[in-house]
Length: 125
Image (cartoon, rainbow, N blue to C red; front, top):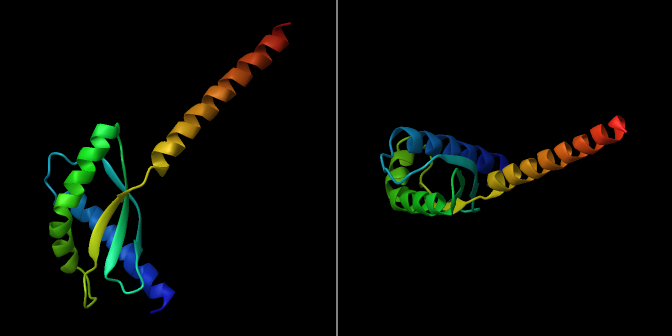
């Protein structure tokens, strides 16, 4: 199977799963979830959906449980929009990259503020 087709299918899955989660999944345990990517295996039988969750560890765990319990429903809804012969099994995987990026940005802002304060102190002397 061509890489281009696999990429197109992964992008379609990402777009549709994001829409299904935001519009059709009504689980109150589901927090603010962002899809960061989708990777399919070569046979297109399995799709790993990478998600980031806004909040603390408890919110992450609760949202991941909600997503995994809704995986069958999401897969069924996804099947209605796909032209492929087989709808891949969905596995939701937590992606900490957004949280790590926010943490790095906060540290850089703090370092930048500290350096700015140091330069101001030098200028005053």
